[in-house]
Image (cartoon, rainbow, N blue to C red; front, side, top):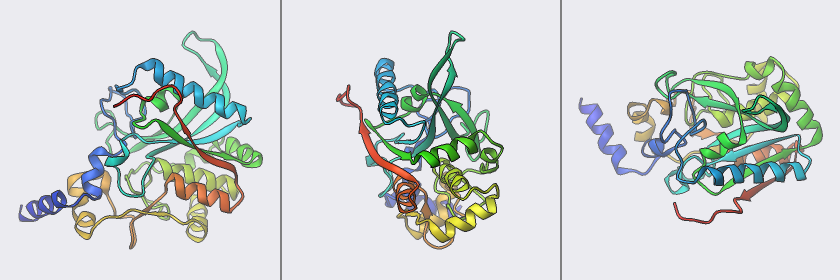
Length: 284
């Protein structure tokens, strides 16, 4: 009991990792299905038509660049409530393909391939699953009026699409979830680390998860997450998604910035940029 009270007092006094956990990219008002990083269907402060318009804006932008596959990132929480150095909290693959509409007809458009964490009801929040949904689902979970986009080279787009369509895609999935999972440890994963692992498997053309981790340890520079010693020790007592037992030394994770830098350095991407919503400048 004394340890718990000490943890609560320390965590209340510092604006670090454990305090922002509840403001991370978690569902604001989830329905019965598992969701993660405020993916899936959540109640949003924007009218649905504006979310649909932004989703379509992104699709048109990607199509104008002839991107068959892009990696898109959004923030599911206001940036003021995120840890220092973290601007986007969810990343996913947008793949141009044939998708089935609500009317049952087939349409050409972008399908979104995500890793989502559980909602604590039908799936524990410490577990994750893979799901394909659509741009409107992705944008409905955004708390900011912009997304970050990485467009891989044509060859990497081809490799990534092949990986997503193969058993390797699921091989890269680790169901044990952590908000700040280490990209160098195979025991836990979050959505951005999953994106990185799929990129690595495609770049090195390997089906071995152990080889992916070994290669990343040698070639990937992770994003440090600034947090104090007491947060590291007592964080899991406050939020089980903050399990840090996969971290060795400095707490590090994969982010849009570190993934973009890795792909640029290794000539795996054509461009990286931020796209701002063009049709809405209202207050939250």
